[in-house]
Amino acid sequence: MGMTTGMHTPGETPQPGSGAEVRHYAIELLDDAVGRWPGREALVGRGVRWSYADLASSVRSVAATLGSLVAPGEDVAVLSGNRPEYVAVQLAVHLLGCRLAAVSPAISDQAMEQNLWSIRPAALVFDPLRHTARAERLNAVVQPRHLLSLGPCETGVDLLAGPENRLEAARAWAGADAVKTVFLTSGTTGYPKPVVHGHGLYALISSLVGEGGLVEAGERRLVCTPLTFIGSHFFLPTLMSGGTLVLHEGFDAGEVLETIAAERINVILLPTVMLDQLADHPGLGEADLSTLRRIQYGASRPSPRRVRVALERFGPILQQVYGMTEAGPVSLLQPADHDPADPHRLGSAGYPVPGVRVKIRHDSGREALPGETGEVLVHSGGVMEGYLDRTVTPAVREGWLHTGDLGHVDADGRLFVVERLKDVILHAGTGLRVWSREVEEVLLGHPAVHAAAVIGIPAEANGEWVHAVVVAAPGAVIDAHALRAHALAVLGQELMVPAHFHVVDALPLTAMGKIDKAALRQRYTPARTTTV
Image (cartoon, rainbow, N blue to C red; front, side, top):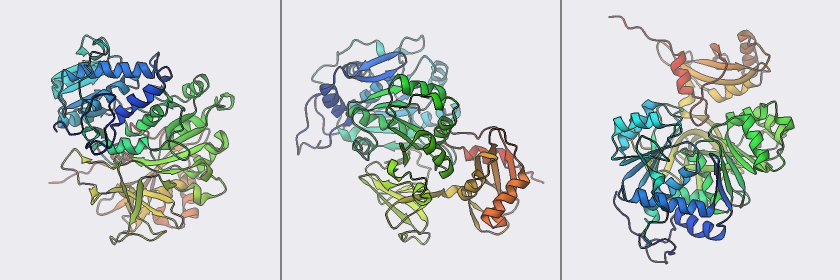
């Protein structure tokens, strides 16, 4: 990938007809937000507090050093926790016209090595406080030209040690069409896949500011999920609208409650599993949440029962976000639609966000009518350019992303996500389809069950048997016979009742906080013996 057209110097606004009508999101941030609020607090984390002027200075310094080592179009991989410097590195990489490979520390070493080997970055930037050993292993396997640390370290070269502001004014930034990012999927249905996004993702996210969007101007946002995941890139409009990001290295419900009070947090985005943990924390009743205006949740389809619990404990401030690595944000269920007395609306994923079109493809290939279930297709500027791995079946066809989610749209245009296609169980005894989510909802309705995951385990011949993996509610004991009788009474069909129940202390989660059904299938699928 070479240098693209539409180059201009920092601070210069592209003119209509120049080939760069779409403003580079990083240039827009540095020109507009920093110019308007230089002294306002932008980033808080790792014991430091950056103003917008501090952020701009750091971006210029990183770009100066990095620009002397890599060429436009080359790949720069970043392995980092949640720290302000990560934001500076991302902006600098994109301004230089390099492709950013966001490496989550939460994935396995094997997945990390495999994906970076396919990318072969020119530079690997790492966080020395937590990830020096992994960076050394990756360096030996992937062998980038440059190994760069975010701070002093005996391994690699300190990327942050360069003099500030030595990037000459005549240097041209890349145009918006040069912005490329590689994210990894959550891996819920298998191995994490590298996804390539262009500037369209950032343009879509940046547009969702204001009432009914993702971000309110000037908000203070607490970020607990890794900045290397696509969902955490909702930080962009927060900064563009003069807000503040408070960065946590991970999720601890008690620390989150303390930080909301201490930092006067207005909004937080949590995977559904983390929302449950926050709602169940024993210190919730004494916590000061007076500044909290919105809790955004997503990453997996929520249980309406658990959403009602969160509504009781937090009030009408929930906003569901449906999206995916391949498409960014797709739809929002607004606080006003979180009506516990309206189970139909509460089970929805809401309406598509502005700029996003959704349609349902029926099994026959035609577009589904309202209420008919089929695969959810998404069209927007935020849809990925494709998978980096050419052996993966393309998911974008004729501009539409085939999400692999099953759902329907009601007569009012609300989207309902029913199931992952890969989570539909083909019952071995009857050949009929079982919706795992439907069975999970029934199990969650039993007072002894706190969490549940339903999976299909391959039968000896064809099809799958229904298995349930459950976590007991506090103080409860799981009785498989009672659960089976409860499921049969509600579902009315023997084929939908789990053949086996597995009781665990906690369900395994992916790095993005989703229930890891791939891990559960692997754990409970019996080894097959082969006779010769």
